[in-house]
Length: 246
Image (tube, helix red, strand yellow):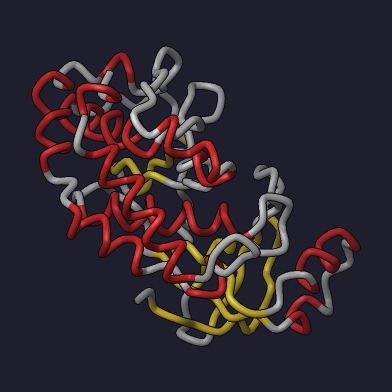
């Protein structure tokens, strides 16, 4: 399971994100960018962050370390912004933390050429998890110590926002016309199938198992039923890469 830490100080909000994430210090002396369960997207955005982020890590792609951040709303008592106060009050308990990369720069496709192999793997991965949020307008990529890092996967796996229809879109094609790495993904013909071949049921189950139970329980199913639904959907999608690889 993901490492669990406890927030000890709320540092600052990051207003670039629509969900109003914040920088938090934790009891392991680490600093994390925290996505709050009380944000408008709800726990399913955190589920997508974990499944996609941990799957990317297992595929050798660069994703900052994830952790479960336990939050007591009292940590934000000095925050003057009422919107932030309300968000943190609604997010008591387990939230999603991503290792903070100090000094990281937003990715610029002109200033930061990407190796064709890595670019092709990122595109193939995004195609599998149906990442609609890696465009030139909002790359969700950082440059840190001259390395590319993938962040913000809350908009992936969007089939889970409509489970009754999910089976009908399991092999949905991926639209990559405005993917920020498209110009560099010249090795996709070989790297795409190679990445798809590694999407085994065992690998998918490992990533899904990292999600805390409390983010999966809802009115439709309990946590184990939810895990099974994710496993079934993603395993079926992985079986037909020709349907979703660009």
